[in-house]
View 1 (cartoon, rainbow, N blue to C red):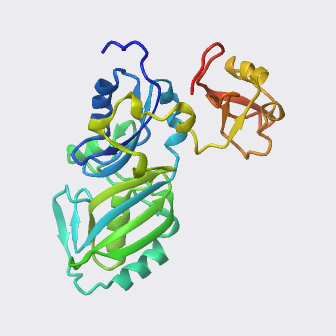
View 2: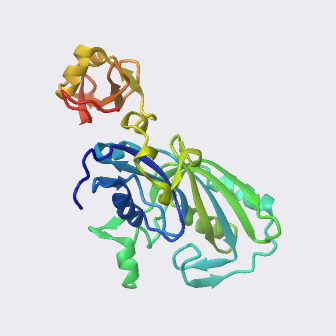
View 3: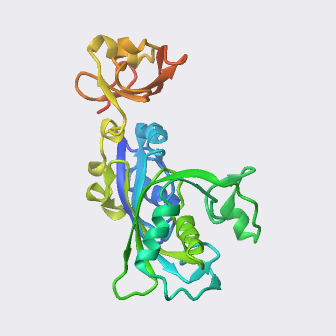
Length: 305
């Protein structure tokens, strides 16, 4: 695809529909926006819906700072049935009689075993790589490999009953990046003495980016993009003067005091020009003695909102 003149830069907050892979959304958005420079900040399962962040143009270089942001999900877990994929898309592998499980019991187990730092084994049907091969590629070949449990954090987990649907419960999850809600649902079922799978999933937020500002893919156009400065709004930010802005535009390594980030934590830091435009993202260098640019968005002589 040839780049259109004045190809856009910024962040798209898309409300992904079910049935689309994250790659599908990226491919479609390239045509809608007239640029090949589109990437996403973390996959969302094809059957899942909700917030998917797309970096466009120069903002693709900012995605590395968005991928680690915490996530919020709403999902429905169905007790009593296990599946090969841990969600409704997979073949049923086991059934359990769990009709007597109450909401209070599910809430108690969720609070005791699945809140705070936990270890989680990634599902076979996932984009995680083992020895350079994605797990879902192995799963399609009928191959299952040992997966090492990984630490994740469940910041908050609340459970509600689904009215009129015995055995189904809604999970409201605030978790660290890298958490698999499918695995959480399956592990919850096992902890309750049986099994479970995730019936449906909707991502309601990534960091501060919520469904309130998301657009459906078919409505995506350059006017819907957030600026590069807004794309990194979850990072601590500093606004610099013209002289420092010139140094930042040339990608110079600076002392934290020169950059004005001494009181802004360990970084990384969004560095804005006097007009509020995003110039760069800086990070610690030499054990914090200096600050160096991780990404320069607006090189000297250019501007980027």
